[in-house]
Length: 493
Image 1 (spheres, helix red, strand yellow):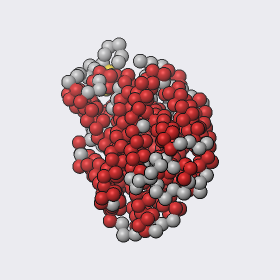
Image 2: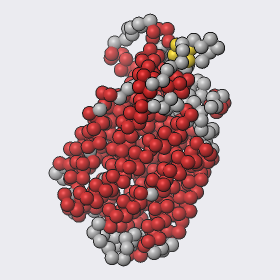
Image 3: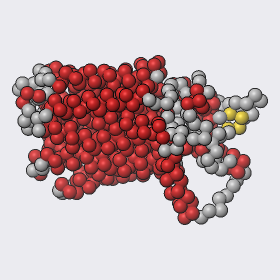
Image 4: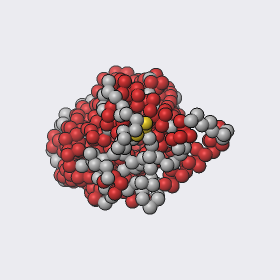
């Protein structure tokens, strides 16, 4: 705020209104989006084996069912990010949710493998909107406790995986995979029902020069939180669109809607190219390495657990289940390893705002590496489960911190696009993983698969060392022009 108290910025407004009931509702909606994504991803661990048996699929066809989802997420992450940065966060949320819920429900009635493959790829495109939910929630949270609340937000993913494992354990033996697909689409349908209540991001509105609209949302936040906005007028430091005066004077655009669509398309390509500008290219490339490694490691451990727990495993010396194999061992092991995400989240919450994003990532990558390393050699069944439990705990912790760190590293004008593209690179990791790592497991090359995971984890940890700056306790940047380490460091708490 200036010395006369006549103006205040969005960050000052968020600090003034604090984190209250309004942000709590935003957290629930965004969290439900993450919960739905986790369920749709985890379902791949259960449905694949059942469909393989029912339809007589080959192992490569089963792996393709997983890979097309990640391929769709790759397309969706880029597309919804561009839409979100250029047409609004809410439009990105709406489009991705419609596709996820619609295709997810229809896949329940798939008559054959090809139709299921197509519908699950469409679900993947919809799930690519996950980074938009993260970006949207992030922009409502004050900088002072952003780390803690983003960890709380990430907990919805963990609860989604645990819930899916529990539902699969109950539903699959009794009702089959179609019912599991149908039940798993319900959270996405619920998102559509409550969509009209979701507000647009005031930070996004400010970057588009719509500060009067942003101010109205801030007033609602203050009212529901029972706090007050600072005295004066909200000002935006964005230089990318209309200025504040033209926005508040009832300015009416002369462009037709068709012309605006053309401009939005051009702006979308511009947002993508901005990621490779001199100020952002280093961050962009390093994030790609980090997200690829994180997704490959996380989904690899999840899929590795299901593959080694399957009743058709050929590698008798590497099985995870206890000596007397039971038909539901896959549900038990995936449920147990899903529980590993809870201590991983707690660990993230404890260290994130204390030691910072970079040190947290490196520390937990190292521990994930240590837990996986003994699996290169044969281990008794119970120790294999314990080691995978620990590896998943620390990998999900790195995943959580990375999901917070990534959008913080980009300015608002390209945040959804940058995080979306980085997430898309992560989807490539998830897409390649079942084709490579699971393929090695199926051919009983367990040691080679573990070594591959270790190399990916080590590479990811090394990439973190070269990130340009730490974001702990820093305000979010809005424009690329003022972006950089020096700009960030000028905004300590």
